[in-house]
Structures are given as C-alpha cells and as structure tokens.
Image (cartoon, rainbow, N blue to C red; front, side, top):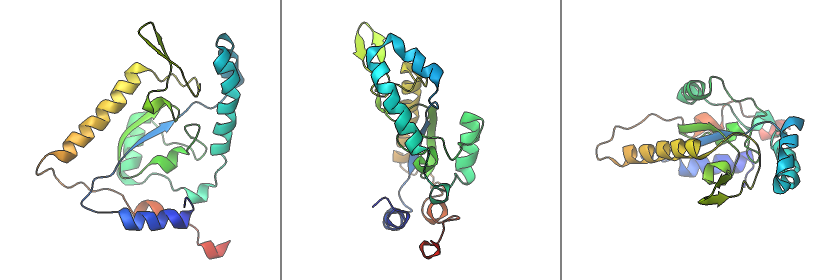
Length: 185
C-alpha cells in the first residue's frame, strides 16, 4: 500500500486535525570511494558498506514526481536546521528524505536510517554497539541525545493541557501537491 494512491487514502483516513503530527527527518552521506576506504579498519564495515552504497543508490532512484518537497514551515525549518533543502536524491540509505516529512518538522539530522534509533556504533568500553549500516555520516551520541530530546520536548508540548493548536501541513497539502494523475501514465 505504498503507492501514491494508497498513501493518499491512508492520509485522508488519518489526517485528524485534533492530532499533532511531527516528523524526524534524516539524510545520510552519499557513498564515496573515500568512505569505502575508511571501512578497511573494520571487517564488518568493509563487508556491509557496499550494501549501504547499494541501498542508498536504490533509494535515490525514486521518481521525484511521487514525492513532494517540503512546504511552508517545513521548508523554513529545514533551511534553519540544514542551511538548505534536501535534494530529490537525498535519503537515509533506506527512505528518500523528502518522503519522511509529515506534519511539523521536529528534528532534521545527518544520519542513516538506523542511526536515529541508536545503531550508530559506539566503541566506548562500557557501551559496545555496532553500526549496522556504516554510512560514515558522523552521527554519534551527542546527535542521538539532541534528536530524542527534541522528540521528547515536542511530545511534552503536545501533552500540555490547553496547548495551542498548531497549524500543520498535514493531508492534502503534502500528498496532492503537484501529484500526477494516474490516468496520465
């Protein structure tokens, strides 16, 4: 059900104005030969980096016409956090960056798909954790803490009694903007 029509149906059924929608957006480093050579100190990364490069290139091949760009306050927030807007080819190694935007932009980070849930690789003696998708994006404990602090602050703000209603670009603004008609194919 990930077709544009299926997503439009889901969005129409779930775009409840009384609910707050927020998103965390990630974009990973584009695979390069230099990053691949950095993997030679770690046998696991040496084996898995080509998989990351393949997945990144696969996610970058989506048709731009099916994934709209950020709108309104989302665009302003991306420029505030990144200094620019993501390109249509930007992704987190799994999902196109522009497809991750939904509702209010809570946080934007340079990370791969697994970094944001804690699989970014820590080599401290007390916390050995592997980087399941070695993108060499530079995401680490500080970025992880900032990301989830922003998510917690967003949730707390939404839970406050009498919290002001927020204007969000949820629903048709994000899903039907410049979308081709399926009959045009």
